[in-house]
Amino acid sequence: MDKNALISFPDLLIWLPLVAGLVSFMLRKDKQVKAWSLFISIITLLVSVTSLFYTKNQSLNIAPWSWIPGMGAGYTVGLDGIGGVISFFKALALQFVFADAY
Image (tube, rainbow, N blue to C red; front, top):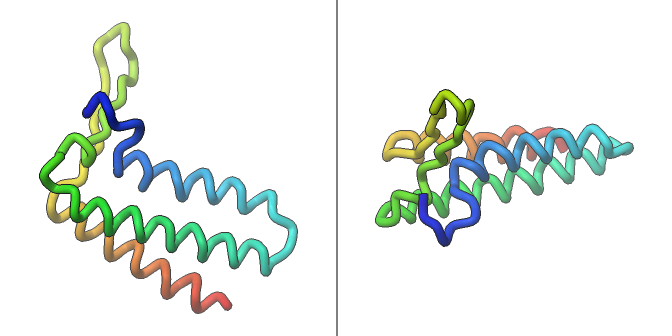
C-alpha cells in the first residue's frame, strides 16, 4: 500500500456503507433515514467511480490487513478490472433502490 495514502478505495467501499448503516439505526424519523441512505449511496457511487479512474496507482485499489500478526496471517481485498465494474454497478443500482423508497 502507498505510504502516502491514508485509506484505499476498498477500505472506503467496505467501511463507508457499514458505518453509515450503523448511524442510520440512531436516526429517529423515517424521512431522515431515507435521506441519509440516499446521501451515503451517492457518496459510495462517487467513490466507486473514482476508483475506476485510479488504475495507474494500484496501491490505492488494494487493502491489505494483518489478521493475526503473531502467526503472520492476513488477507488482502482488492479491486481489479471486473471487481471495479461490479462495484460501480452495485453502487448505481443502490441509487434506484433508495430513490424508489421515496
